[in-house]
Image 1 (spheres, one colour):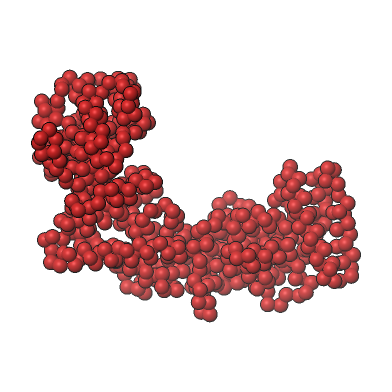
Image 2: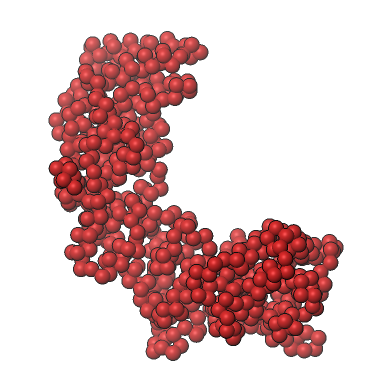
Length: 614
C-alpha cells in the first residue's frame, strides 16, 4: 500500500499544498492538546542532545499525491488522509510566530518559503480564516481555530517557559530546523522536529483508509509503520527477487501475528498483557530495539528501528532475517517440553527474553540448556527450609520456589503430556496460603462479618461430618460446637468470644500438639493460590480448605497442580483415617521432601553445606 515512509522536517513542509477532503471532520483540538504540543517542542528545544541528529517526532501524517483545480489553476499537492488536526495546529503556531514574533506576513523572508497551505474541500471559509484568525465564534471550526490561536498566544506571552525574544527564537529554530539529508542543512543541531511522512499509493481508497484509522481513534502503530517500511514500493527495488521477498514477508508477518495472538504462546513469551498490544508482532520489535517500560514515546520502537536500518547500514532484508530468527527460536522453545518450562519459568520471574534468544542463537544447544539450568539454580539459591512467611524478604523467595516446584512437577514427569499453563498463571494475582491455619489470626478483629462467615463455613463442615457418622466421641464434640454456634447472638458477638470458639473448633482439626512456629510459616505449610481464592479460604481449617479447593477445581477454576495435590493428600502415601481431616506433621514432612526431590532432579537446590562454604 505504501509508496514512501520517511521522516520529514516541518521545514520541508513549507510551501506545500494540502487538501483536506470532505470526509474529514473540522478542527477540534482542545486547549490541553495544543498546550501539550507546545510543551513537548519546548522541552525538546532545551534537551541535551544525547545522540547525533536527534529529533522530536510527531505522529504520522498519512497523505497521497493529488492534483486539483483552484482559481483556474492546477495545484499539485497532497490529500491528507490522516493528521489534519496536527497539521492545522502546526500551521497556527507558525502563523502566530510569523505575525507576532517575526512581524512578517510571510515566512519567505526568513525561510525562503511560506507556511504550507490548507485547502478544505467542503469548508473553503476555513482556509481564509486561518490566514487571518480573529475571535470569531460564528462557526464551530472558527471557534476551535481561534481558541487554539489564543492558547498559542497565551503560552508564549505568559513568560512561564518562554521568557524573552531569544527563547522564542530558539523555539522557532527548533520547530523549523532542517533535515540535513532531505533539506540540505549543514548544522546537525538544526534537525529538530519531524513528522512521519506516510505516503500511500494513488490507488489507495482514501475513505476506507481514513475509516480504518479513525474508528475508535485507532492510531497507526509501530508495527504497522514498520510493515510499511518493508512493503513500500521502494523497498528491495535494487535487490534480486525484491517482489518475492516482499511477498514472503507479508505471508510470514500474518503467520507471526496469528501465532502471537494465541494466548498460550503469548503467555509463554512475555509477562506483558496481550491487551497492551494492538498488533502482537510489535513484541518482537520492542525486543529488537531494547524498549523498556520506562520509555513513554509511543513511536520509540518504529523510530529506533528505522534509524538502525540507516545508521548501521543494515539492509531491510537482514533486519527481516533477524526478526525471523527471533520468532523461530520462540517457536522452537514453545514446542520443546524441556525448553518450554525452563525458559517459561525464567521469563515469568523477569529474565530478559532478548538475552535468552541471543544466547540461544550463539551457543550450541547443550551449552544453552546448561546456561538455563544455571540461571534457574541462581534464582533459588537459598536454604528453603529456613524461609519463613513472616520474615522480611522471604515471601517472594517462597513464591518463586513454589512456582518452580509446580513447573518442574510437570516438566520432569514423562507421563504428563500437558505443559504448565503460563496463560492461567499470568492472568492471576498470586498469594501464599497456609495449608494449615493455626488459628484465626488472619481475620480482622474489627469486622464481625468475617467472623460470622468463618463460623458459617465451619458449622457446615461439622454438620457434614456428624451426618457422615464420624466416631461417637467426635460426633458428640462436633454436635456441641454446632449448638454453641447456633446459640450465638450476633449483636453480642465479640472478638474474644469468637476467638475462643474458633480456637476450640480449630483444635478439633489439628494434631494433639500445636504446630511449631517455624513449621507454621515455613514452606512445608504453604501453597500458591490466587488472591481471590485465598480470600474465600479465609483462615479456615484444612478440611474446609480442602473441600473448597475441590469445589473450585470442579468449577474449572485454575488451581496449580502442586496446590491441588497438597490438599488431596497426594504427597502422603499412607494417610491414616484419623489424620484425613488435617495437615499433619507427616504431611508437612512428605510435602517438603517432594519439593526437594523435584527440584533436586536437575540439581537446582544448593546443599546446605555448599551454601555455608560460599
